[in-house]
Length: 272
Image (cartoon, rainbow, N blue to C red; front, side, top):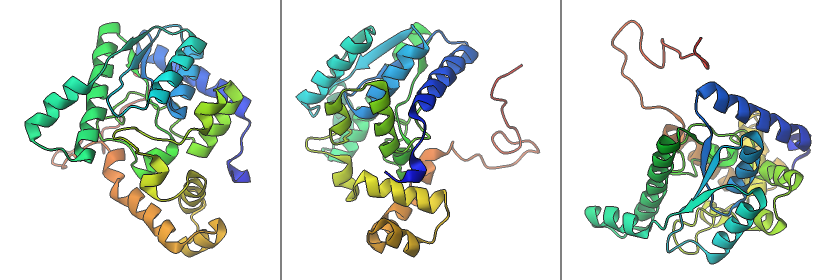
């Protein structure tokens, strides 16, 4: 990892736990519900969440494409933190939805899976009066590597300002099992899917490219030279960030009045 991305990971851990605790309290909700996949991001956020509040409920929502290892790793994390959980197999729900659009396109069906999971998370959140705690990281958010109104449909993103490689460092600090940290990242929306396989670039390079482009404002050609990658890879990252901007924004409101919500009317973080 780049030296510039190194942090005091003990401080980061304590800060995120404190912020998460304060955010839940300020929201007026009683706790947090989280979807656990067995991957590094959800494992890290679960560990932070259970240290921020005792009121946690975990949902395991496997499908036929979920690797057995991910389920095993999820249970390892559950035993580690001792949080209450529910396991809901989502295949019947997914098939019911996908049959209505008469498509077996794997991306379309994969997005349905993510949105079914979001629906279940919010159902439990409403039932328990909890927030939905998101698990996306900065790399995924910038690249748009998430499903709009699927895993992107959450109330708060505690690790959303940490790149994937930084999340790995944080995971080491807070005691996430080594096999979860080293496991290839994957949404597991279809069999054999991996994040780096889809992107065509390893996360180490992706994070360097993102940092140099969008935090250091470096010229793309210089970024390619600095990262020791092709200009094509840099351009691919730029395209993904630009093309997926809509995923990072609330729906556009066409301005007609003198005070339009979202542009003129800004909400306070905490109402007085």
